[in-house]
Amino acid sequence: SCAARASFAMAAASGLGGGEALRLSAEAGAGALKLHKGDITVWSVDGATDAIVNATNERMLGGGGVDGAIHRAAGPELVEACRKVPEVKPGVRCPTGEARITPAFKLPVSHVIHTVGPIYNMDKQPEVSLKNAYTNSLKLAKENGIQYIAFPAISCGVFRYPPKEASKIALSTAQQFSNDIKEVHFVLFSDELYDIWRETAKEMLSQF
Ligand code: ADP
Image: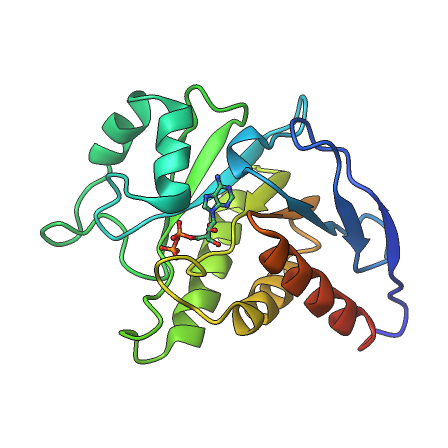
């Protein structure tokens, strides 16, 4: 909208030493998008109902990458909570593009939202599945009163989604929830991913 303006400020999130804040809307009460470089397992917002998103697999019982890091930091109660999530078919607790919520145990946040992004080379419509993973995570956050949420770069690790394309879907979908969630953060694990997310955010701002 032409009423929207962009501003840059430092983000105050515990554990990560700030980060860059890209406020994509100037309308009263509208949410903000914030970008950080670092480890999502140390992210939280003091005193808030907050959640980190886990990029997991359909089995939902842990794995490598960010999934492994989240389970290590949360402690063994997290896998027990995941095991209690009902299977929708044998071995599948969370189909690709869907999301589930659990407590966060030893993590500094209130909740973990588990989602499954597409395996880029195996999914017939990876862009639809990736958008669904972000949308369903944000819907679940809204339903659970979560005001602050942090995402990793879903599918950009072993699932091999091209990061530039992924960043456009991630940021545009987050923006659609700016009236529902106070702040959507992205915690990018590498300089390369951080720079890609930052460039895409700037390109999106120039479209306003
Ligand atoms: P996927 O299977 O969805 O590709 P991965 O865990 O392999 O999931 O990768 C998703 C993204 O998470 C990758 O960009 C990877 O670099 C990143 N990542 C790995 N560990 C962490 C962490 N501790 N915090 C934030 N991001 C992480």
